[in-house]
Image (cartoon, rainbow, N blue to C red; front, side):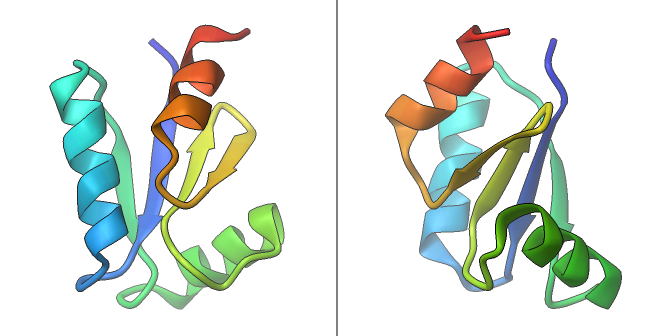
Length: 78
């Protein structure tokens, strides 16, 4: 199974939707709350160029925002 990292904040509804989507489809993930850890926030910006969340890293493929189609595409492609 591919490694999935989701960069989130506590009150982000799109982060919650992303996590629920992955769980519903049987995928596990590592959550990195950027409010709680500045290193994770810097890592997210370095990977994506974005300050907004969610940012999803699927084995190096970056998906910005809650986009089920892009997430599934990244999960199915090598």
